[in-house]
Amino acid sequence: MTLPTAKAKLLEGKRGLIVGIANDQSIAWGCARAFRALGAELAITYLGDKAKPHVEPLAQEVDAEIFLPLDVMQDGQMEAVFDRIAQDWGALDFVIHSIAFSPRDTLHGRVTDAPRDGFLKTMDVSCWSFLRMAHLAEPLMTKGGTLFTMTYYGAQMVVENYNIMGVAKAALESAVRYMAAELGPKGIRVHAISPGPLATRAASGIAEFDALLDKAKSDAPARALVTIDDVGATCAFLALDAARHMTGQVIYVDGGYHIID
Image (cartoon, rainbow, N blue to C red; front, side, top):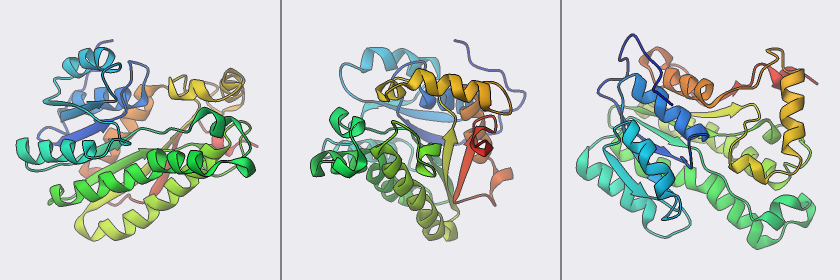
């Protein structure tokens, strides 16, 4: 894919961290493309050695200045990423947190039956990691900034087969509101972006996901599925000074699907 064109480099001079690119179908990749198209400089992470060959060419495509491994379940890796950003850049303007995980047996089982270990891993990766990133980003955002995470409609309503991830995303959305209140006086904004169903690698773990895609396409007022570039464009807009009075929100990018019963 080629980068989308932009008439103005509205984010030139801004620097940000993108977490969650697995391949060229990832939401985080759509965000990286949109931010780079507007002139932002990027730091990009990859999950591990298996993911690196898939992510490294994408990082090169958007001229990522920092490229490091990040498994949020590995002690010290997140701190190492932010230490490198502090060393190389000394400041940070935005963070994209686009990761979530639940053990297969926990995700596919009833919420009522969730084992403690599976529940804690789900919350650790899908919610707490965003809190920790905000904690580490805060001292680097001396002139303000924007923190983004990805959520889904299943945080608000019961969606068949979404199960324990809906619980984790509900906690994540609540965390966004509290973080926005706490960090707002420092000029740091916090948003949860809620895309409609997307055919990403992460979504492939949800049972009967193809049926959910078909339903979204047929029922959404826009009669179309959202793309990763749609999500990226929304995030890029929210990072602009023009959106400086928007914070603590769940932003739906789903063709209106969430308004339909």
